[in-house]
Structures are given as C-alpha cells and as structure tokens.
Amino acid sequence: MVQFFAVHWFVESAWARPYSWARNNISDLGNAHCALQSDPEPRYVCSPEHAAMNASFIALGTLLVVGIALTGALWRRGSASTVTRFLLAGAGVGFVLAGLAPADVHENQHVLGALLIMGTGNIGLLLAGARLAENVSGPLRRLTTLLGITALTAFGLFLSGHYLGLGMGGMERVAAFPLLAWALVVGSRGLLPQKTRTPGTTPEMPIARTPQGQ
Image 1 (tube, rainbow, N blue to C red):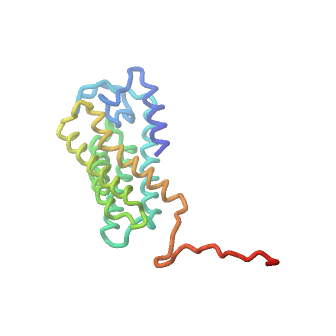
Image 2 (cartoon, helix red, strand yellow):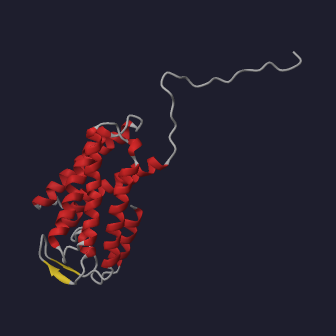
Image 3 (cartoon, rainbow, N blue to C red):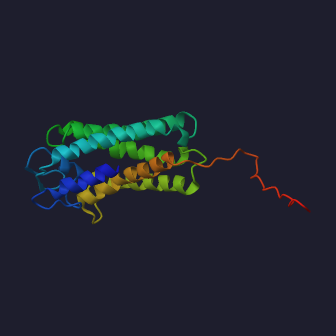
C-alpha cells in the first residue's frame, strides 16, 4: 500500500500541468496518451510517468489478493467469510485490470476494474466488519464497518455526479482509499504476534520463596 502512495506522488509530480486531487481521477495518472478528456469532467491529461503508475496498480492488486489469501486466521469460519474475502480479493483483481488496461487505451476493461475496486471491494469491506475473527478488537471491527459504509456512500455519490465540494477526484478517493487504509491496518496486525490465552485459564501468580536460613 505504501508503494502505491509513493508512486502516486512521484507520477503526479511529473505532470507539466499541476495534477489535482480534486479535478483529476486516479486513473488519469495511468493514461498512456496526452489528450483532453471530456468524461466525466473536462480536463487535460498528460502523465509522462504513466508506466510507473500502471505498474503500481498491478503490484497493489497482486499484494491485496495475496494478503487476503494469507490472512485466514483473522477471519471467522463459514461461507459468509469466504464470500467476503472473495469480494475483497475482487478489488485486487480490479487494480490489476486497471493497470493492464489504461482508461484511454481499453476503457471498458478499465471501467470494469474500477467497478471491482469500488463496487465489490467496498461491499466486501462493509461485510468484513462482521466477519473478522473474535480475537480482532471491537474498535477495529467497528471501524471496518464504518469505512465500508463511507466508501460505498462515496461511490454512489461519485457515480451520480454529486461531489459535495470535493471535486470528481476527491469523491473518487473517498470511495477508493478506505479499502487501502483498512488493508494496511489489518495487514500490519496480521504481521504482528498476537497474545493468546486459553479460555478458562488465569494468569500464573508468582510463587513466593522463603529466604534460606530462616
């Protein structure tokens, strides 16, 4: 996830005309040609380092799919958890597709990738709040649900053209970034050792020793 934001900054900094988080889509960074784009908002797009951005999309998607596959211990058992993880992995597939099919080269495939990211991925994020394992902290589960609600709401507003003063690019980021933030937090938790305690046991108490000679 960190590489995505680092590459995002690098690629946008290469633009001759300043790149705007409010006026430009994330996908604009990966466009292969310099041209005036009219949909959904008029803007001139010219991304000299588009290849780096598309490679970052592919790397991000691959890592997301692998991460979901390797975090089985963080999930409850059952088919609902399996479906949730497949939906989240779908977002990873969407990022890979977006990187392989820039919006100005293969628009339909790119749009499909975006739908997988902000559609199925955010549905999975919403469901994840109830499907994370019981040993995952309550605040994290509640935060997951809140992020899912926020991202899905923003996606609906983005599709309907209601940007609430954030601009097209700003609303798109509210729809896309919660999933990335969640993946970073949950992935970091999965890498850290967790303390476990067998149910019904109590911590051992130190045994006092009588000093010798008494």
